Length: 229
Image 1: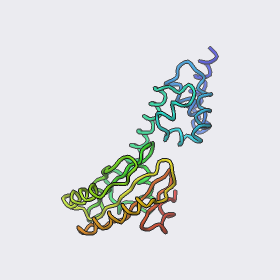
Image 2: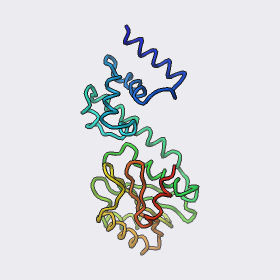
Image 3: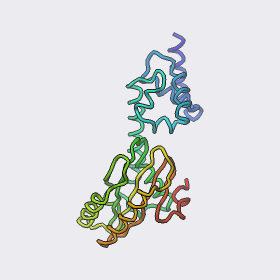
């Protein structure tokens, strides 16, 4: 069949020259594996039109993906699997290393941004470091439209003491907005600063991640340093 021949030609071309592929061709090829009998070129173009880029497609949730014509449940879940795989791939670069191992503010920004690849909901993490700035833990303390309440921050500070924590930072995302702090974000920042400082733990900053941007609230004048590629 002509359709089958096209798929085989595209596979062979990718095997020899993957960098030659346009974005829609990459999506078209990916869709071969979950859409066996449809023109995936049309679906690929529709995805890019709807979400703007491959990043937009990967970051999209199941329901938005399913809203694209001919994108069923399996295809939407397939892209969510890709998103989760990329998330873990990016995080693996930073496993078991400390803040002192980041060569620059940009490296820390890269790590913080990696926590939210493919994330639909607003999520807040507390990240703890020991005296040598070795990463102790990265713990989710809230999910939904909240950047962590005072109770959870107090509980986290208590746990941080048990783990011999020397420094901590707070980070959450704005999935569909800009990295601009709300009044709630500022309140949470002040609470975190007070709570951690009161038990002798250095509070590094509270960061907001939105897309590929990372904004520190306390040291906002350094924002550009966290966003260099």
